[in-house]
Length: 179
Image (cartoon, rainbow, N blue to C red; front, side, top):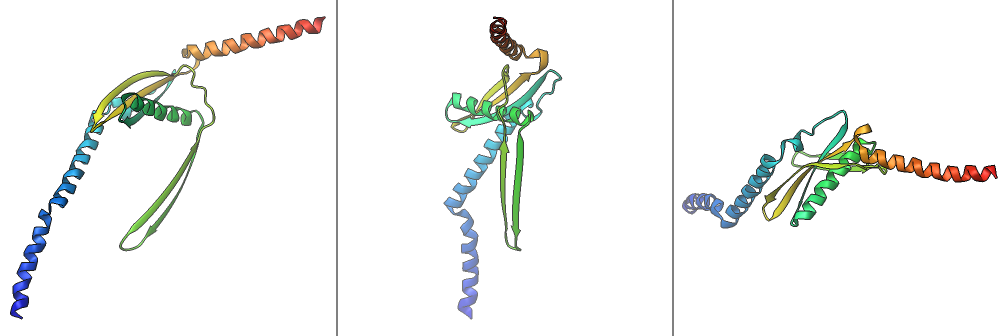
């Protein structure tokens, strides 16, 4: 009995010392560093990334991307913004989710699928961009603007070109019909 009473405080002291394990400290420090990095990314995000502008003559879309290469970070961010413009212009999305719960654990599974038919983004412009460092990577933010209607000069020129080509083709066919 005396031995048991003597062992209880020793075991309690050893258990308390377990929190000074250098690997636990290392893991906690790493988690803290990652949290600070995420907070920095949010703090450094431009206002337009969180509140995309609206306009009657343009569709705006913001995207972000991270990569170890400066140019790749911008490419990823632009593609992210393109995807959002595509969804705005009539893309579709579906989602299915399953959840299993027990008293000790919860397992969730989510599957999403989005689909976007070809959308003509002629005239899309990079309205704003920003890049920051994120650890040993670059984080790029891009704001795209797709002018609509008469504001999209490039799309109007493209449409006029098609009309001209069609008219030239039809005129040749019309003259052949006269012969």
